[in-house]
Image 1: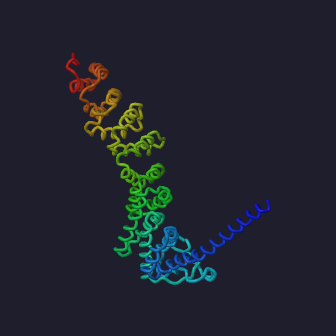
Image 2: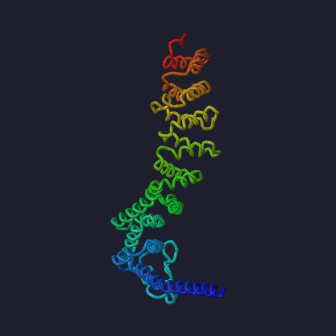
Image 3: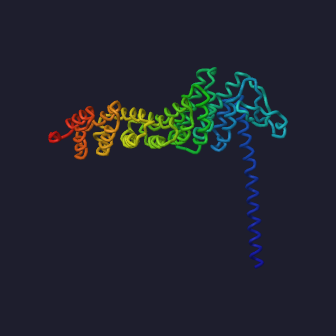
Length: 386
């Protein structure tokens, strides 16, 4: 028993020695890495080629740790006091930290004044390094877009900023890193609301559509008219076929918000690839007597019926025929034209529809009688007139 305890104690002591040894080995390495990152922070402001060379030798984790600092460099203003690591934190803490455009501190480090030329070069350097971070730098895309709004910047720098935005965004899109993208959607959406030039943030939403479409759909019902138009353009570009947004806009037709219902109908009228899946629900809604939406419903159907073959080749052709006959009989003469356009697409009618058309040939309404005879003539056997 004594030998066993002695052996167990020896093992614990050996493990302790190993752990301490590992710490002693890693501490200088950690200090070296910290010093390297600090040197890069300094060189971003003073010597970009050197900063790039040092940056390329960092691990991905250390590169990522620099991103918040690089974001803040983007907000520098000429003549501002800018910190970089020159001395131990104990000395640096006596200095007043620089606050960037966003109000965040660049750190409690020694400071120096940035001249206008150096400010521009520091920003160029930050953009360069952020682009090298690729997908990891997606968190910086909103700051890059803000910087792009400054039209006083040299044209070549504006191009560099846009190139960096697209390089980072495409990298994030290809890797489909939705959590990283979703974390920035609110900031990106704010850029849509705060600036007249919305092309860059809108295109970032479109490029990251698999991750951003849900956010735009969720926020659409609470946007104003001007912003809802931008959102709809984004959604149509993300999902031209309507596979994702089509069902949501059909759901919006059940909303108590009349403006949202009208908007949904306008959008559905533009999603040509989704027409086959939405035509039946819209016909049913019109049949159910949605009088407050009748003009919009008819306008949407008018767009549908301009598509050749939509009705005649539809798998629910017979059901659609019945709905159209119901509507043509129920609607006033001034509103039948749209429904008649749908009926004209049909080359023939099932027996039950032919029987209903025959009954309509005896209707008191002369216009209805004439239309029934015309439809029987276009798509039925000659016996229909016997």
